[in-house]
Image (cartoon, rainbow over all chains, first blue to last red; front, side):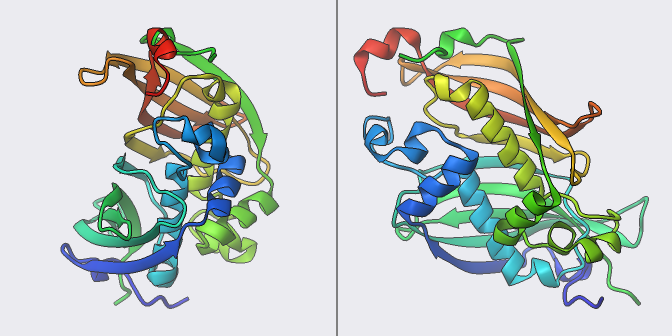
Length: 150
Length: 155
């Protein structure tokens, strides 16, 4: 299957800016009930008495929202071979009901594999901001992409 | 009020719990919503991928671990969130029918310098399959209220 993007398209410094969704209260509670049912993610009343002073989204939901954004923006059209892992996830501010997220993805580094020269590893930095311009999350993640066929 | 506070964690503290079996339907449903890459959503295309079959999104494996942690002890703890994760390694593919369990090991505890009612604990979190292989590992930190701070109310 021909893909639009290959390893060669991820040059250090390349940036994708992606508009994300507004995160609703119901989605926060629904996600957290399934995956991260801590009281400040699932119980509005109890969350008011938490250090956050109200309901906040699971950090994993913010990650999921970003993953979906990059899938739709380019990853599904990329000759992706998976990811070995992620470095340094930081949840720097809470995401609250009604927050509108956007994300900036920057290519940090791209290296051709020594053992498998048909592919390379790309290090990406994700930065996620809310509608006030505050950074709510950042992380660095690796993707493995096939090189463009000659 | 809670069973576990900052003081209850010490380097070497460990908790092993689980289990959760992921079906092909579970894998596809998660991926359709959050990570619709072909080897997570389409069995036929997955067979032609380097993985040779359907595999779970690594984020699903992380979420399974998170849920097992909540059910195992976190929801009985005075946890007030996580500043972040140092490292996540997707070590092995998770395939339909795999049964996952979760192991949490505390490696370091530090009382907060600025907020004396809490402290930070660093953990190694591992998701392990039915044959004992670690499929995902993470090094992460969480904040816990101190037992002595409980009477003071809000963090």
